[in-house]
Image 1 (cartoon, helix red, strand yellow):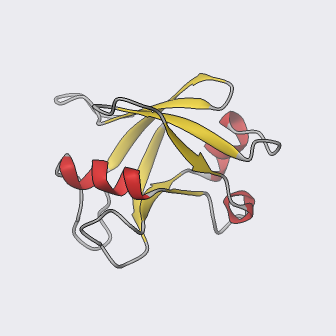
Image 2 (cartoon, one colour):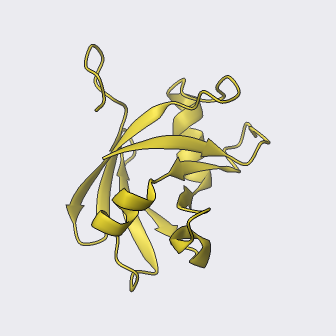
Image 3 (cartoon, helix red, strand yellow):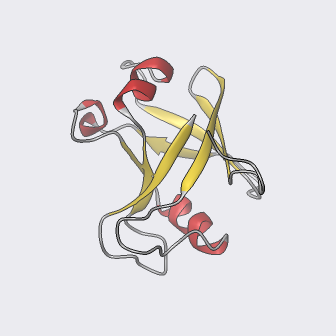
Length: 112
């Protein structure tokens, strides 16, 4: 699935305030309400990152996955900060149960 990078408006250099926005349709198709967290295998990182699923994730206004580690990854890969209103797309691939892989879209290919 394709998700959009998200930020709370601070664009902190240490990665705080960053995450991904999942569409309500993808959230309902690939996530389960009984999960309290997910594991993200982040491209280039040695260990999976655990990301808590807050109650707001299930609201129509929410659907954000927030993690300082995701912010550091976005910044390290030149995906953040971005121009206002133009967040980059990222690939979030379901692997098994609550485990997903995070990757930059492949160059030369449309991500969707």
